[in-house]
Length: 294
Image (cartoon, one colour):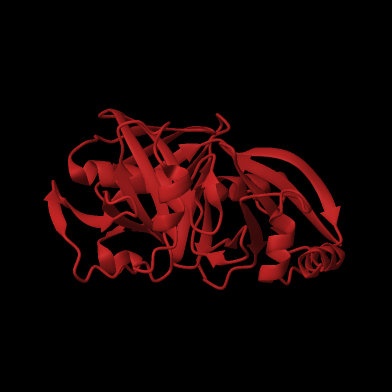
Protein backbone atom coordinates (compact mmCIF):
# COMPACT_ATOMS: atom_id res chain seq x y z
CA UNK A 1 0.00 0.00 0.00
CA UNK A 2 1.32 3.42 -0.99
CA UNK A 3 0.01 6.61 0.59
CA UNK A 4 -0.22 9.57 -1.78
CA UNK A 5 -1.35 13.18 -2.03
CA UNK A 6 -3.17 14.57 -5.06
CA UNK A 7 -2.09 18.14 -5.86
CA UNK A 8 -2.20 20.63 -8.72
CA UNK A 9 -0.42 23.79 -9.85
CA UNK A 10 -2.77 25.87 -12.02
CA UNK A 11 -4.56 22.70 -13.10
CA UNK A 12 -1.42 20.72 -13.95
CA UNK A 13 -2.15 17.81 -11.61
CA UNK A 14 0.13 15.43 -9.76
CA UNK A 15 0.26 12.36 -7.56
CA UNK A 16 2.92 13.09 -4.92
CA UNK A 17 4.61 10.20 -3.10
CA UNK A 18 6.75 10.36 0.04
CA UNK A 19 9.74 8.16 -0.74
CA UNK A 20 11.35 8.88 2.62
CA UNK A 21 8.74 7.35 4.93
CA UNK A 22 7.74 4.52 2.61
CA UNK A 23 9.59 2.42 0.06
CA UNK A 24 8.72 3.57 -3.46
CA UNK A 25 10.05 1.39 -6.26
CA UNK A 26 8.68 3.24 -9.26
CA UNK A 27 8.47 1.58 -12.67
CA UNK A 28 6.91 2.79 -15.94
CA UNK A 29 4.06 0.30 -15.43
CA UNK A 30 3.31 1.63 -11.95
CA UNK A 31 3.47 5.27 -13.07
CA UNK A 32 1.07 4.59 -15.95
CA UNK A 33 -1.36 2.75 -13.69
CA UNK A 34 -1.37 5.57 -11.13
CA UNK A 35 -1.79 8.32 -13.73
CA UNK A 36 -4.64 6.62 -15.63
CA UNK A 37 -7.62 8.98 -15.36
CA UNK A 38 -10.27 6.28 -15.79
CA UNK A 39 -8.84 3.28 -13.96
CA UNK A 40 -6.24 4.85 -11.64
CA UNK A 41 -5.94 8.01 -9.55
CA UNK A 42 -5.34 10.24 -12.55
CA UNK A 43 -2.57 12.81 -13.09
CA UNK A 44 -0.34 14.49 -15.63
CA UNK A 45 2.74 13.46 -13.66
CA UNK A 46 3.79 11.38 -10.64
CA UNK A 47 6.24 13.13 -8.29
CA UNK A 48 8.47 11.44 -5.72
CA UNK A 49 10.25 13.00 -2.72
CA UNK A 50 13.49 11.14 -2.01
CA UNK A 51 16.72 11.56 -0.07
CA UNK A 52 19.26 13.52 -2.14
CA UNK A 53 22.54 12.29 -3.52
CA UNK A 54 23.88 15.85 -3.98
CA UNK A 55 25.57 17.10 -0.78
CA UNK A 56 23.95 20.57 -0.99
CA UNK A 57 20.39 19.42 -1.71
CA UNK A 58 17.63 19.02 0.88
CA UNK A 59 15.70 16.45 -1.17
CA UNK A 60 15.71 14.69 -4.51
CA UNK A 61 12.76 15.49 -6.80
CA UNK A 62 11.80 12.87 -9.42
CA UNK A 63 9.13 13.20 -12.10
CA UNK A 64 7.34 10.51 -14.11
CA UNK A 65 5.02 11.45 -16.98
CA UNK A 66 1.64 9.82 -17.48
CA UNK A 67 3.17 7.54 -20.13
CA UNK A 68 5.58 6.14 -17.53
CA UNK A 69 8.72 7.90 -18.72
CA UNK A 70 10.95 9.70 -16.22
CA UNK A 71 11.75 13.31 -17.17
CA UNK A 72 14.19 15.99 -16.07
CA UNK A 73 12.02 18.79 -14.67
CA UNK A 74 8.48 19.99 -14.04
CA UNK A 75 8.01 23.58 -12.91
CA UNK A 76 4.41 23.34 -11.70
CA UNK A 77 5.33 20.11 -9.93
CA UNK A 78 8.23 21.86 -8.20
CA UNK A 79 5.80 24.26 -6.54
CA UNK A 80 3.69 21.34 -5.32
CA UNK A 81 6.86 19.54 -4.20
CA UNK A 82 7.87 22.23 -1.70
CA UNK A 83 4.28 22.65 -0.47
CA UNK A 84 4.11 18.87 0.12
CA UNK A 85 7.43 18.85 2.00
CA UNK A 86 6.27 21.64 4.32
CA UNK A 87 2.73 20.33 4.85
CA UNK A 88 3.98 16.85 5.71
CA UNK A 89 6.63 18.09 8.11
CA UNK A 90 9.56 16.74 6.13
CA UNK A 91 11.41 20.05 6.49
CA UNK A 92 10.87 23.61 7.69
CA UNK A 93 13.60 25.03 5.47
CA UNK A 94 12.47 27.85 3.23
CA UNK A 95 13.83 28.15 0.63
CA UNK A 96 14.59 24.52 -0.17
CA UNK A 97 17.17 23.16 -2.55
CA UNK A 98 15.85 20.25 -4.61
CA UNK A 99 17.99 17.92 -6.70
CA UNK A 100 16.67 17.21 -10.19
CA UNK A 101 18.24 15.17 -12.98
CA UNK A 102 20.19 18.14 -14.32
CA UNK A 103 21.25 19.92 -11.11
CA UNK A 104 19.72 21.93 -8.26
CA UNK A 105 16.69 24.23 -8.14
CA UNK A 106 15.65 26.61 -5.34
CA UNK A 107 12.04 26.58 -4.11
CA UNK A 108 10.64 29.38 -1.94
CA UNK A 109 7.15 29.22 -0.40
CA UNK A 110 5.89 32.74 0.19
CA UNK A 111 3.53 34.07 2.88
CA UNK A 112 1.00 34.84 0.14
CA UNK A 113 0.63 31.11 -0.54
CA UNK A 114 2.42 31.26 -3.86
CA UNK A 115 5.68 29.45 -4.53
CA UNK A 116 8.65 30.93 -6.40
CA UNK A 117 10.91 28.50 -8.25
CA UNK A 118 14.40 29.41 -9.44
CA UNK A 119 14.28 27.36 -12.62
CA UNK A 120 18.00 27.06 -13.37
CA UNK A 121 19.93 27.84 -16.52
CA UNK A 122 18.45 28.05 -20.00
CA UNK A 123 20.11 26.70 -23.13
CA UNK A 124 19.19 27.41 -26.72
CA UNK A 125 19.42 25.89 -30.16
CA UNK A 126 19.37 22.41 -31.69
CA UNK A 127 22.10 20.87 -29.52
CA UNK A 128 20.36 21.95 -26.32
CA UNK A 129 17.17 20.02 -27.14
CA UNK A 130 18.59 17.10 -29.13
CA UNK A 131 17.26 18.41 -32.46
CA UNK A 132 18.58 17.26 -35.84
CA UNK A 133 18.59 20.47 -37.88
CA UNK A 134 20.34 18.99 -40.94
CA UNK A 135 18.87 20.37 -44.14
CA UNK A 136 16.33 22.64 -42.41
CA UNK A 137 15.90 26.30 -43.21
CA UNK A 138 16.48 28.74 -40.37
CA UNK A 139 16.06 32.49 -39.96
CA UNK A 140 17.32 35.02 -37.40
CA UNK A 141 14.81 36.72 -35.11
CA UNK A 142 16.28 39.15 -32.60
CA UNK A 143 18.74 37.15 -30.51
CA UNK A 144 17.02 33.89 -31.45
CA UNK A 145 17.14 31.54 -34.41
CA UNK A 146 13.87 30.17 -35.77
CA UNK A 147 13.86 26.68 -37.29
CA UNK A 148 11.37 26.05 -40.10
CA UNK A 149 9.79 22.64 -39.49
CA UNK A 150 7.52 21.44 -42.35
CA UNK A 151 4.03 20.35 -41.24
CA UNK A 152 1.81 17.68 -42.84
CA UNK A 153 -0.57 20.30 -44.30
CA UNK A 154 2.25 21.91 -46.28
CA UNK A 155 2.65 24.81 -43.84
CA UNK A 156 5.63 25.16 -41.51
CA UNK A 157 6.17 25.88 -37.82
CA UNK A 158 8.78 28.49 -36.92
CA UNK A 159 10.30 27.08 -33.76
CA UNK A 160 12.38 28.57 -30.98
CA UNK A 161 14.36 25.76 -29.31
CA UNK A 162 14.81 26.20 -25.56
CA UNK A 163 16.02 23.78 -22.89
CA UNK A 164 15.02 24.39 -19.28
CA UNK A 165 16.37 21.05 -18.09
CA UNK A 166 13.77 19.51 -20.41
CA UNK A 167 13.38 20.37 -24.14
CA UNK A 168 10.86 22.83 -25.60
CA UNK A 169 9.90 23.97 -29.09
CA UNK A 170 7.92 27.22 -29.01
CA UNK A 171 5.99 28.84 -31.84
CA UNK A 172 4.01 32.09 -31.94
CA UNK A 173 0.37 31.87 -33.05
CA UNK A 174 -2.23 34.56 -33.76
CA UNK A 175 -4.94 33.02 -31.56
CA UNK A 176 -4.06 30.32 -29.05
CA UNK A 177 -7.73 29.31 -28.67
CA UNK A 178 -7.92 28.18 -32.30
CA UNK A 179 -4.32 26.97 -32.61
CA UNK A 180 -4.03 23.36 -33.90
CA UNK A 181 -2.62 22.03 -30.63
CA UNK A 182 -4.48 18.71 -30.93
CA UNK A 183 -2.95 17.92 -34.34
CA UNK A 184 0.30 19.85 -34.64
CA UNK A 185 1.19 19.34 -30.96
CA UNK A 186 1.66 15.55 -31.14
CA UNK A 187 3.30 15.84 -34.57
CA UNK A 188 6.03 18.09 -33.15
CA UNK A 189 6.24 16.30 -29.77
CA UNK A 190 7.14 12.98 -31.39
CA UNK A 191 8.91 14.26 -34.52
CA UNK A 192 11.86 12.11 -35.50
CA UNK A 193 14.18 15.12 -35.51
CA UNK A 194 13.84 15.39 -31.72
CA UNK A 195 15.99 12.64 -30.23
CA UNK A 196 14.21 12.72 -26.85
CA UNK A 197 10.84 14.07 -28.04
CA UNK A 198 9.89 17.63 -27.07
CA UNK A 199 7.29 19.81 -25.35
CA UNK A 200 5.44 21.78 -28.03
CA UNK A 201 4.40 25.29 -27.00
CA UNK A 202 1.87 27.58 -28.74
CA UNK A 203 2.22 31.22 -27.60
CA UNK A 204 -0.05 34.19 -28.33
CA UNK A 205 1.42 37.62 -27.62
CA UNK A 206 -1.13 39.91 -25.90
CA UNK A 207 1.28 42.74 -25.06
CA UNK A 208 4.96 42.99 -24.15
CA UNK A 209 4.31 41.62 -20.66
CA UNK A 210 1.38 39.26 -21.25
CA UNK A 211 0.96 36.03 -23.22
CA UNK A 212 -1.54 33.22 -23.55
CA UNK A 213 -0.07 29.73 -23.78
CA UNK A 214 -1.00 26.15 -24.54
CA UNK A 215 1.51 23.29 -24.35
CA UNK A 216 1.36 19.76 -25.69
CA UNK A 217 3.62 18.06 -23.16
CA UNK A 218 6.01 15.25 -23.90
CA UNK A 219 4.50 12.03 -22.58
CA UNK A 220 1.38 13.70 -21.15
CA UNK A 221 -0.47 15.42 -24.00
CA UNK A 222 -1.99 18.87 -23.64
CA UNK A 223 -2.14 19.93 -19.99
CA UNK A 224 -3.98 22.82 -18.33
CA UNK A 225 -0.61 24.43 -17.56
CA UNK A 226 3.09 23.69 -18.03
CA UNK A 227 5.58 25.49 -15.80
CA UNK A 228 8.74 24.84 -17.78
CA UNK A 229 6.70 25.50 -20.93
CA UNK A 230 5.69 28.91 -19.57
CA UNK A 231 9.34 29.68 -18.85
CA UNK A 232 10.45 28.49 -22.28
CA UNK A 233 7.81 30.63 -23.99
CA UNK A 234 8.84 33.74 -22.06
CA UNK A 235 12.54 33.18 -22.77
CA UNK A 236 11.78 32.63 -26.46
CA UNK A 237 9.63 35.76 -26.59
CA UNK A 238 12.30 37.91 -24.94
CA UNK A 239 15.02 36.54 -27.22
CA UNK A 240 12.83 37.25 -30.25
CA UNK A 241 12.39 40.85 -29.06
CA UNK A 242 8.65 40.46 -28.47
CA UNK A 243 8.47 40.49 -24.64
CA UNK A 244 9.89 42.30 -21.61
CA UNK A 245 10.37 40.66 -18.21
CA UNK A 246 8.37 40.03 -16.05
CA UNK A 247 5.64 38.34 -18.08
CA UNK A 248 2.17 37.12 -17.07
CA UNK A 249 1.46 33.75 -18.64
CA UNK A 250 -2.24 32.90 -18.94
CA UNK A 251 -2.98 29.18 -19.27
CA UNK A 252 -6.22 27.20 -19.19
CA UNK A 253 -5.50 26.37 -15.54
CA UNK A 254 -4.55 29.84 -14.30
CA UNK A 255 -1.87 32.52 -14.42
CA UNK A 256 1.88 32.22 -13.77
CA UNK A 257 4.44 35.00 -13.56
CA UNK A 258 7.83 34.43 -15.16
CA UNK A 259 10.88 36.69 -14.81
CA UNK A 260 14.17 36.45 -16.71
CA UNK A 261 16.87 38.93 -15.71
CA UNK A 262 20.63 38.55 -16.15
CA UNK A 263 20.30 34.82 -16.74
CA UNK A 264 18.17 34.24 -13.61
CA UNK A 265 14.87 32.58 -14.51
CA UNK A 266 12.09 32.43 -11.90
CA UNK A 267 8.47 31.35 -11.99
CA UNK A 268 5.77 32.14 -9.42
CA UNK A 269 2.36 30.54 -9.00
CA UNK A 270 0.05 28.59 -6.70
CA UNK A 271 0.27 25.02 -5.40
CA UNK A 272 -2.89 23.31 -4.13
CA UNK A 273 -3.54 20.10 -2.19
CA UNK A 274 -6.72 18.31 -3.32
CA UNK A 275 -6.90 15.07 -1.31
CA UNK A 276 -4.87 12.25 0.21
CA UNK A 277 -5.34 8.50 0.02
CA UNK A 278 -3.71 5.11 -0.28
CA UNK A 279 -3.50 2.62 -3.11
CA UNK A 280 -2.57 -1.05 -3.51
CA UNK A 281 -0.06 -0.46 -6.27
CA UNK A 282 0.46 -4.10 -7.23
CA UNK A 283 -3.28 -4.69 -7.55
CA UNK A 284 -3.67 -1.52 -9.60
CA UNK A 285 -0.94 -2.66 -12.01
CA UNK A 286 -2.47 -6.15 -12.20
CA UNK A 287 -5.85 -4.69 -13.16
CA UNK A 288 -4.24 -2.42 -15.73
CA UNK A 289 -2.31 -5.29 -17.34
CA UNK A 290 -5.42 -7.48 -17.39
CA UNK A 291 -7.39 -4.82 -19.29
CA UNK A 292 -4.66 -4.47 -21.90
CA UNK A 293 -4.40 -8.25 -22.30
CA UNK A 294 -8.15 -8.68 -22.81
